[in-house]
Image (cartoon, rainbow over all chains, first blue to last red):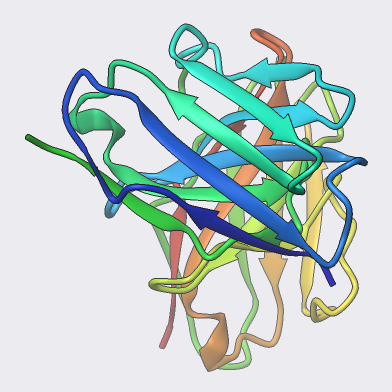
Length: 115
Length: 111
């Protein structure tokens, strides 16, 4: 059974870079697609992007200029970087497995953007 | 990037059936069979209930079913139970921008 766990700072200052890591256990990251999805408090879900194990990526057009998703196969992890954050980026960030539908989710981590 | 359209809330009595709609365009829901549905209880991660319009993952109750007609997809919950009370989100592939878009969510209340 694949399990995912997000980790990273819970507080980021405006204009800085949000960085999160997802550790995958119970399966190899060297297959399938790996995605990030976020949910602002009290609001709906937003797809951020995915990375394929071969390294290709695809991002939400509305975030594309600020997002980078990368893989570290040696650690069985993948990561999210979101630059120039504002209060609108405050959300619970989920790492997930898949591209078009997502059966495996991390528990989510709240990232607050505030000075 | 506009969200897919879902009703804000749907309610039903125990044992009844309800249907949640998810309306998009020919560039997303209507153009591809890549619609999925998620159930989310408060404070929990979403759970996949339906993928590729009408396929149910292993372990999901057969009380949940999905369908699509034109630009509108639907999730039907039959034999409504107390534990079905949750938020439900639809998602679809969208060709413009080659991305995935969610609906705004529907709160299901069991009366």
